[in-house]
Length: 564
Image (cartoon, rainbow, N blue to C red):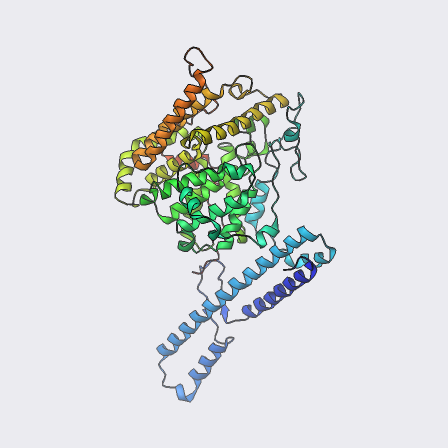
């Protein structure tokens, strides 16, 4: 479409939309009756209204066909009904696509042009939100606003970060504002998987892959391309008939729902997803997983920190933010999951569109549990269950057997996403140190924010007291190493990660010893430690208990338009 003539282009789109409306009205007059909204009632063939039905009725009553067996008439009738039903479903699918594209085109031009003449088509493009979408929007509205008016005790140390309030986020306590979504990028995506070099494709499946050079120039587009490639390479696009443009739009919209905070941003999400891809592709974790579970793992890693404010769960409680009162447990993790579902609920970003209802329920419950599993307070639970089941899980992997129990599947997948989320130090020393700098910068900003608001300061996040090398040693020894050692006993190729963790830990110890004459002792408490949840049942039951009741404990109704 020509940018020099936006009004004409929108007018053409409007004509196409109007044509689709006429076509839909015609489709409604086809020969079907009955309730087909949920597939519970079989559609009946109306002989009086349809041309095919009238033909059969006429010939059934004619003298030439007096001897025609009724069974033959029923067979012809049924075959005609099935054929017309398929055609009608295809027509409706095309009409939905036309309406969707028209709405996106109109929004893109409203963003670009701000032309009054474009507004005349706006009313035709408005599609009412479903009750599900309205509920999700309400849950995600101004999440980091304190329910009490914040009282600032001192001037903020970083004015440009702490005072960034947008119109849709009054008095937000997040370290960065929400990003805008540009519909022009959704309408006309510039995606070409063939542009990826063979060398980068090979490197993408390796433990040492480094996304930081793209982060430094804020090249999210290349990250979108690499994520799309992962879905294609793992066979998910072909297996689940994911439209490539829908996949791109899903990745793009999710990336824009991440805030530009120092660490928990979209590039961290990419880093975690790339580690998961390494586990699946190079460590052959797919040996004991189904394709549906692989799909769930990839979506969960992309979405696991969506809309992270750069301030942790403890801060949300102390500041009495809206989401702290909405989600009593795993506050941010429940919020990330709702963002994931909100994106999947939109037709233009719903990559689950062709799943059966049973598959859809399974994926949504798995996504919920995997995202909740990234809560550090559940680290001990996952560590214990993985340790108890490691030998049995390895046998399933060794025998290429995905026929394990639901609980064992949950343990494996939670172990994978936990390790992927704690993967900074499984890379080379140079890459690990750069990620460490980013995460500590975010922690320092939290303690600054606590001082600014007069909240109790998290002592082990105070920039004036922390020793970086000691914290990284704690991170490796207390969190990463125990988990990765267990995972390596399930998937032997993970042993390379353990060796790199040992090397990086020794490097940090060497670095620390250069500043201290005596051997440095570990601190009693670390910025990485959280109060651990008491084990009260199976991993599955504990994850379910942490889901917010009424908001994310049950799988929401994501629209599904697949042909049954």
